[in-house]
Structure formats: C-alpha cells, structure tokens
Length: 187
Image (cartoon, rainbow, N blue to C red):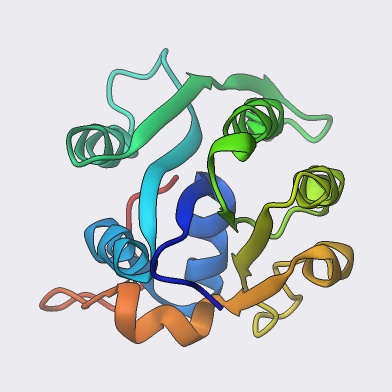
C-alpha cells in the first residue's frame, strides 16, 4: 500500500531485478518503472546498483547504466572482479549489498517508505533496522519463478511484498520486432 503524500525512495539491486524479470520472461522498462513509483508517492530518489566489468572494451550493460544516469536514477557502480573457478569457468563477482545497505540507512530518516527491488535474503536485517526507524519497506521480487527469486525471510520481514509478475503490464518493456522477449541488457 502506498500513500500519495509519502516520501519514498527506490533501491534497485540491478543484477537481482534483471534475473527475476528474466525468469518471468520479460524485460524492465526503467522509464515506466520510475513513472509508476512517482505516481504512487513523492519519490525522492531512485538508486540503481550494479557491478561493471571495466577491463572489457565494451560492456553490454554500459548503455543501460548511461541511460539510467541521464534519466533521473542515482547510479552506484563498482568494478566487478573476474576470476576462474575450479572447473575453469569464467566467473564475475560484484556484490553491491554493502553499498545499498549504507545508502538505505543514510536515507531512511528522510523518507516514509523504501521500495527494495531484490529478493536477496541478506537484506532482511536491513529491512528490520529501517522498520525500527519507523520507515515502511516494500520488497519487489517474484515467487512465481522456479525456484522463487525471493527468500522467504525477506518476504516475511517486509511490510509489503509486491509480486514483480503483477507489475509486468505496468513496467514491462514490449518485445521488439522479431524479439523473443528474453534478450535484454544484462545488469
């Protein structure tokens, strides 16, 4: 539930939201997402967190990051770490949990409602702490994927759980001509 006069902030775990939307077979239109939550309250900030591979000549997520930056999102990025696992597969690690947590704790005294776009159970203590400050917390993710993209503890701790699949018609990007709907910028 949202109230028109409440001050709200969005905290988007980019890779988590991307994976959740992809598991449901759609891509996020971030312009529509921003407008939807501006409609629901007085949005003070919309943060987007992602790790970037800086050593590549071209990062597939760079156009999205640039677009978000120029269109009202506060971008929080850091270089991703690249490594090879025991089986010789290339892996990328770029956890943004600490950055998101610090920003949410700093902004909490200035908002009435925080909307967290993530299903990561590591954020449960953050939600609990923010709630103790009198701030309501909604979590956007999905239980309709197999397996569910949200931890049960996170969903139970939140004041409100918003099923991402129910936002598909509001914030989903229409598939392009000849597009299966599953290709998108990786974030």
